[in-house]
Length: 206
Length: 206
DNA sequence: ACTTACATACATGCACGGATGTATGTATAT
DNA sequence: ATATACATACATCCGTGCATGTATGTAAGT
Image 1 (cartoon, each protein chain N blue to C red):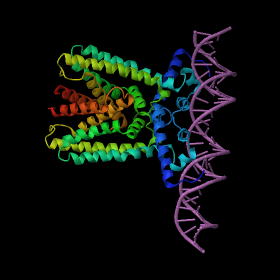
Image 2 (image 1 turned 90 degrees about the vertical axis):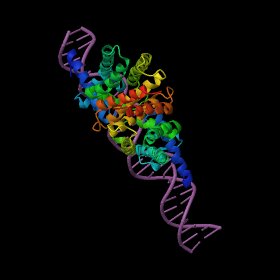
Image 3 (image 1 turned 135 degrees about the horizontal axis):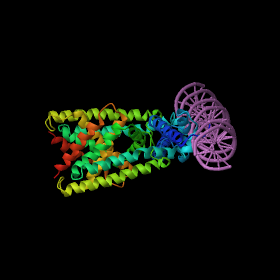
Image 4 (image 1 turned 120 degrees about the horizontal axis):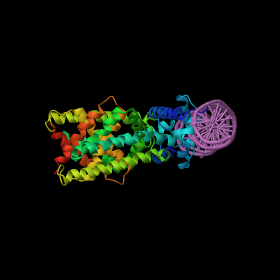
């Protein structure tokens, strides 16, 4: 075979990403060989190794494809609710659920990272980026809680970090369950309701 | 080598379970070979294949080792708080966090099932049992919410199933985060606080 | 306009290790 | 004597990484 144009090469790269995403998502990362991916995309392992260093690099590329839109969504919330920290907390928490329910790539990646991927040295790379975003996000959320407490939207006695941790747990936990059984409930509505309840509960803490 | 007594055989079986638990927990299920397990236990694959059919069967046995104490704990709550549904909800939710923080086997298994194991056809068996218990537990929790609503401990307008789902998400999500970074927070205290906040929030729902 | 030279975009093949499953050996408890 | 509790040995398959082949796009020189 022979060289393609840059556009065609980019297209095969995307094809490989899409194929890998689907196979990882259904069969698990370590149970999917690079050969499986290549053949499912009607290519060979040569193509895979041309575009990516190895399986871990492929996984990392999959995550990077959805990381940007995710962060942009969070930043959009910052702009829209610039003056209301409590609203920002709710919106950001719900944004994750909304996005995962709406964007197929995001859904697939979350499915892979939460259920179809072993948390091990081999998958570091994608994991590292994932965790980085998470840490940043948690730190930001803790700050939001501090601001909300300072503005008296939440009681002064509240532990900001612990509250943020609880919120994160709530959102990720619901996400986790939804990924396991998507038919059971609507992730957007359930997350919104649960987050509201949790925040209301924090408000009436003595 | 030669035949051992039944007690000795049982001991090697436990040894295999313990070493498998540790290796799975640190390196991931699919990145741990049966040979790794055997050698770490100063045995051979022959011993592994004598006691277990294959890797999936081993994983299943690991889960079964902790499933009974887990359920017994939940039943104990039923006896202790026979007359107070709201207290049962809180206690059961916290029982998971308490147990995972106190019992090393439970910690290891949860770590394996949530982070070190791909959710795939190969790991069905353990997964199936895990899910079964979870389903049962969720159904029970939904009933608890119904009872609490009927007894006016929670508002009549509340959706029992959705509330139970939220609680489950909260508990599992906190568990998930704690497994990722155990140094960051105390799972017992954080779970208790978050569960209390969530329930308080549900109470003041209109 | 046409060749040249090179980089690109893959395909193909091989060497290697490693994992599984099973068949068989063997020594001992009962 | 026989079933048990393993160890050993063997056959098979699979996945990875790399080295190499190959045909084309592309830019530059003339």
